[in-house]
View 1 (cartoon, rainbow over the protein chains, first blue to last red):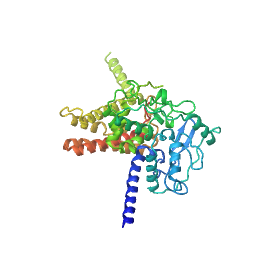
View 2: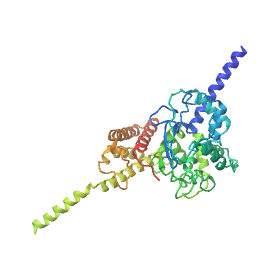
View 3: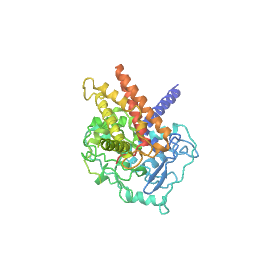
View 4: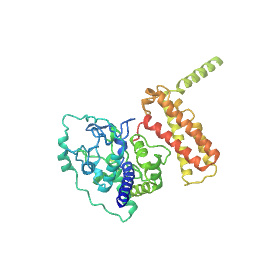
Amino acid sequence: MRFWCGLALLAAVGVVQAADGEYLLNAAGCVTCHTAESGPPLAGGRAFTTPYGTFFSPNITPDRDTGIGTWSRTQFIAALKHGTAPDGAAYYPVFPYASYRRMSDQDAAAIYTYLQSTEPRRRPNLEHDLPWWLGRWMMKPWQWWMLDPIEPTPGTNDPTIERGRYLVDALGHCGECHTPRDWAGVMLRQSHYLAGSKQGPDGEAVPNITTDRSNGIGKWDADDLQYFLETGALPNGDYAGGLMTDVIDNSTSKLTAADRKAMAAYLKSVPAVATP
Amino acid sequence: MKTGVIGIATLLSLASLACADEPENFIKYRQSMMAAIGGHNGSASQILRGRVTPPGHLAMHANALRDLAADLAALFPEGSDFGETKAKAEIWSDWAGFEKAAGDAKTATAAFAEAVAGGDAGNIETAFKQVGEACKGCHKTYREKDD
């Protein structure tokens, strides 16, 4: 009797964690990058044209041959948070581990549990199309050299703003596109955090989302921001385009109103910086 | 003398006809139409979010959206794909897909106007979301991103 109760409890915990995992997966935007245009969800193959070549996202369904079906929880967390593949190689930073490393191990583990519960899809990964001089072996030194220790958070004592910071920085990885990068592809977090980039995904410019009043979103109020994250509608009645449409549809529209409110509150607290 | 005046008048009117539908002019016209749609959409969203309550205005915006979006595909004639436009080449290379997306805007705005006329708050909210989906859906594929 006690055994069966224990088993039922374990199963219930698993279901709850998988449900949490789905929410976190949406917040972390996994679906957008790991799904090819009209391809099966999470089976990879979306192309990213960058100044360093064209990258193709891999399959993260639990398929044992082409996906992550054989990965352990520890291997998954190492990949997500530290950019280290199960074979020890380092991932290119187009995979946003520079942001995901701010995620808690618990949230990363919940995403792992959810992913392993999704439908396995067989879809072999595509080779990245990169210039001759760029090799994966260069990424280990890059990680060692370029990934500064995570700066201590200034730490406001407002839990809403801190939740927003976590959603924007760790899960939503907004800065990966909205913060410009230096010559080595490192985000200029200290000087130009969220100040917009001329070289976003697919060569498109990405807007400034600091509180700068002329270049950024300084004229939006928190309610405008929340409404934008929910619907994609800008205060002038126009709509977001390009990749941001996917971010709205796959991520921010699926969050709770409280989380969108937290993101808006945090973004309103980001200092104004002019677009570089 | 009389013939001269008529001749000049004819020439002038022919000339004005000839440049009336110049692609450059059409692009400007289309952008103004889109700005009008955005204006009504933004105003409607302010009302539906409860931030302002101008009496009777919601129906005005809903009807204007319906009329403005009745035939958006007609704003993109062949040859209007150059210069200062964010219209992507895909509009003309995938005309059937574009016409469908423009048709979605027509359906969605007509349903929104009808919902506003009906007065049910739930229907209005759902219909307005569909308008947003139609705008986003088309812009995603057929409009270049802002900088």
